[in-house]
Image (tube, rainbow over all chains, first blue to last red; front, side, top):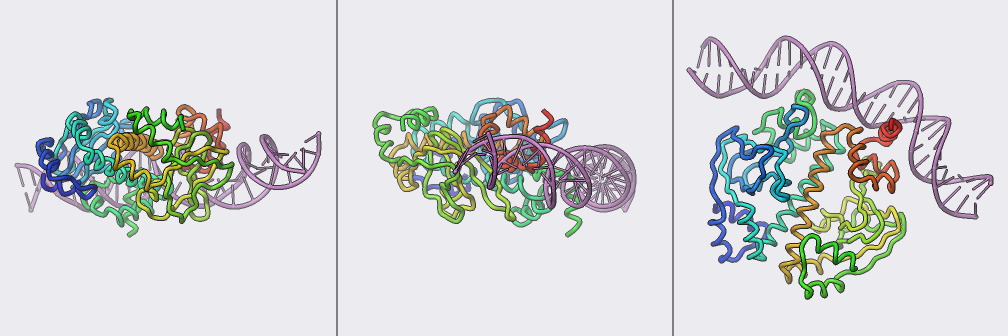
Length: 187
Length: 187
DNA sequence: AAGGGTTTTTGATAAATGTCAAAAATGGAG
DNA sequence: CTCCATTTTTGACATTTATCAAAAACCCTT
């Protein structure tokens, strides 16, 4: 919980008053490798802070699993579309490693946002960061070759390569596992 | 200005008090076709609301112009990365049609965000929408064929096809102009 | 340490898309 | 209406990447 508190204050500071109310808003969750945090079709009513561990979001396309994002320590994760719109999730969230998470329900978060301007600000700033991150990934994915994508990954987020099976990484990059394997063999 | 006020209140309502302060925060800008709203290398210090017209964001890659987004009536546009981080923009913003815009400076916006919780909320919610939009576009771009991408565009945003030159659309979809032309000829 | 399931690699081939060049179509300006 | 510049289409070919199938390598458990 201390990790969560100090992490979010890198976005924007909070008064001690607000800091005190936060721990009660989150629930601790411990899950093992391969367990599902969310199954497609469910409505995702929680936002999770990943204290330690790793997980992936994936959905099914023509019978194939497409991993489209990963989460690691200190990431906020959720099925974003479902959490915001209240519609059923198209994706699954699965643990890649045993993990410790802190969950806050949408209702609780909404209450916090209403009550505290500073939380509203914090969330707004968090969105900015996450938006920029997604934008960068998008531009990369669309206009780079498979080889360049792998090199970027090596440079920017080497921990992904170390901790995630190749097949998941391939679909994360939008290329086939075989192609990724061939690229890798040329290093 | 009235358009702007009523548009943003679809995100979240504002008190009459706040509504009154807003018009003074925006500056009206009228630009003609092909003019640049922002040039790469500049720091983008404004957020724009596009009242009428159309524009595109593009950057240079190996001597080629890559159009990576479009803006139309009632869109907020800016060089997002530059606006948020204060770093020089990598992209240009160019008018595709004569347009009417309302500009708010980052400083003015920051002031509004500090003063009014309801504006902070509104911006937070706007981010949610824009994030979801980007996410959908990302998933599409990465895992669909050129033909599917074009079909989606036809279905979801036909006005893009009607108002934007083919070459720009092709790079927006991440495919070559020739490929797009061939796909189109098969309808 | 051995066995069995999973993951990764390799090979052969096919499909999709890109590139370059030139022709055709389009649309504004005068 | 005509001409010129721009945009779009078409053709031939090259390249990249996907797909399918099988072999190899890698663990995880016992």
